[in-house]
Image (tube, rainbow, N blue to C red; front, side, top):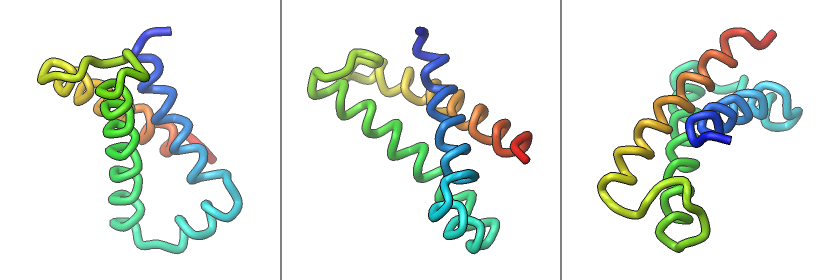
Length: 92
């Protein structure tokens, strides 16, 4: 599985969790539109930071723990964001 595909899957899973997980869905939909967008952005950022932290700890080799790894992680973050928002738009 490629790193790009994994980033896309992570974005899709986050979107589906916020849409279909009963307690999370109710809490999330009660928020204003701006807060929903910021929370989703924060969730994706936390996921990306977690991946980078695991890479720096030597637990995960999706990215390297250097400047090149940060740029690669930024690319994956954008891909996850695109997949996340696309899933949000097409989910009922």
